[in-house]
Image 1 (cartoon, rainbow, N blue to C red):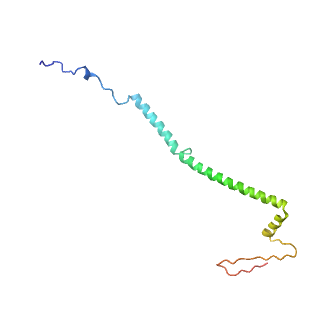
Image 2 (tube, rainbow, N blue to C red):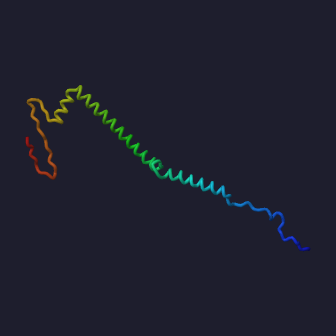
Image 3 (cartoon, one colour):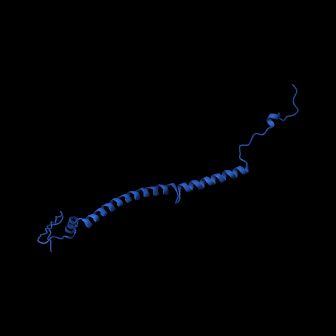
Length: 126
């Protein structure tokens, strides 16, 4: 066997393997994409328009809607009371007696005062 004078490897070994590193322009684009993703994610999790703010505002909205329903029911009850006071003389008389202590001529009003456990008997002065 004769020794080869050419010590270079054959053609298969001369081909360069593709580099796994990104070219310089590719690295810049990757950093730009990463920066944009970071900005978007920071906007999602922090700030006035974040996910936390959205959830907080949604909870506030639900509680306000419930409060509106309660206020509508109260409004309807007060409107019914007003209608009764305007049209029903017995309702007007009941309110005058209960709230203002009014009585008809010849009637005697008795006021019952309950004792509280920590107080002694009370005297009612008129």
